[in-house]
Length: 135
Image (cartoon, rainbow, N blue to C red; front, side):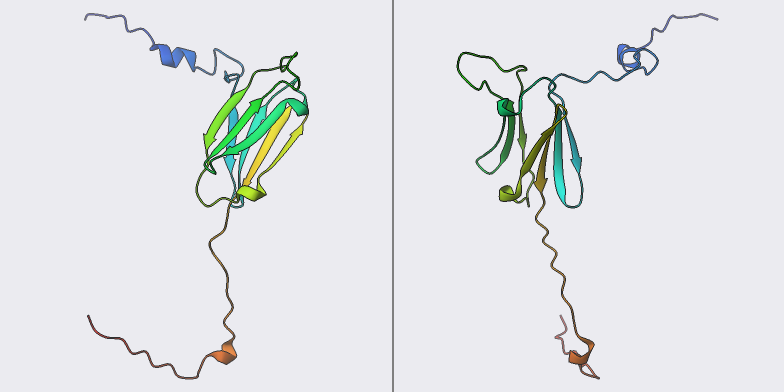
């Protein structure tokens, strides 16, 4: 019986939960969540002042989150730039952003296409006749 050495594949070793106690998250990582009412983008920006954060919408299609120096003689505490393509059916005028405890949260509301309507039972005749042409 021959024995051949089979090393562990590198991706398995690097993603093993036993190797690292916490997951490795890239520096410019933005967490995305979708609820029935909105799309939510959250970014950790510790040490950045609120005045240095810019949230913009470009061409009604892209959400841009970045840091920018307040005056030309200084640098922002952390250089950050991310650009996201916005999904369809959103309310651009309803976009809001909040910054608390080093976490920026941008909320993009979804436009609901479903409009509810009410049919009063008194408006329905007692007998209905449906006429349709056969195809």
